[in-house]
Amino acid sequence: MLETPELEGAISAVREAALLAREVQQELVTPALTKDDRSPVTVGDFAVQAVIARRLVEHLPGVTLIGEESAEALRLEEGIDTLEQLTQFVRRAIPDATPEEVCGLVDRGSGDPPREFWTLDPIDGTKGFLRREQYAVALGKIENGSVMIGILGCPELAESSKSVSGGAGSLLVAVRGEGTWWQPLAGGGEWRRLQVSVRSEVSQARVLRSVEKAHTNVDEIGKLAEHLGITAPPVPLDSQAKYAVLAAGAGDVLLRLISPKAPNYKEKIWDQAAGSLVISEAGGCVTDLDGKPLDFSHGRELQTNRGILATNGPLHAALLAGLRAIGA
Image 1 (cartoon, rainbow, N blue to C red):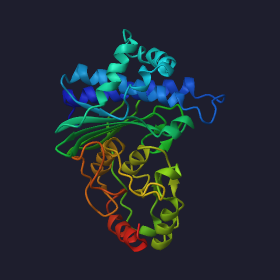
Image 2 (image 1 turned 30 degrees about the horizontal axis):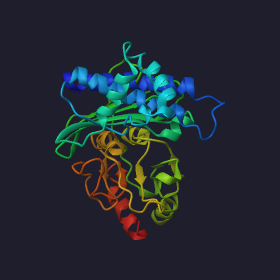
Image 3 (image 1 turned 45 degrees about the horizontal axis):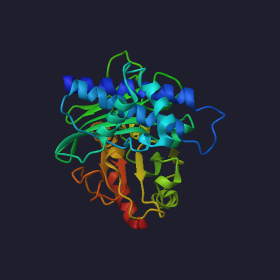
Image 4 (image 1 turned 90 degrees about the vertical axis):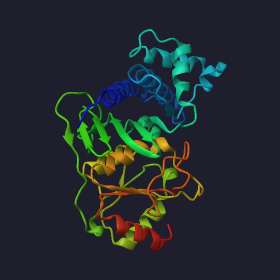
């Protein structure tokens, strides 16, 4: 993998921010946390976006970041406590950070996408984060509607394929035309190139899907598996960590079907940019449910796409045919 100054800066930012997210999780996600308390992931989201925004500005002056979060709520009276807690975490990476600067850094992600920009999902997999399971920091560079660089920081994923809490984690980097590479998130060791599986028998396919039922259509995944004769139980996994697992060959199919509760839902660009390139550069195939390539040229959403299908490649045609057969 050719590490340019641009790529080195982005990799360093994701590594630093993902390790900070782990600190937020370890310190704020406790057994005493109530079921409806999302404050740890709120702090984590804002902290990651602030740190990555700052590092991108330092390494790549003039760069545009399109992020999931804005600081509007932090500036309200009810956001004061969250902003103070958030600022304390950000200061672990940026010692001189002030609350005002933190808000400004978060808001760097609030504009409209130009021709060339970076897009960030600071903590992809909020429920996984709160369960102390899988989540990912996902950063992608987009030029003219195509993803050119994809970086995933997965603190709870070992060797890009195994759930290991508190371990070395995984850092995945994909560069268009140069493959997908893995290194421990904690650093050290050589970069290792990843390749998807070569499985071609659809009945043996290992299907990765979201843990949260609201994010997909679990019933139709079951119907699809029955239609195709897939016997292996689906593997529920949060966040774009699924994309890392598929890229490493430890899964074969990834589905984001349309939930009946949100029939007109369009995927956000930050939910798919980094992960889609990680899979395709590892030799896999990523399209929407109709077999169309993902088009990142329509603002903050994949407006011309419907759902997501990612496979190792050999299984893609069979899965598309199965989706058409069941009317998914």
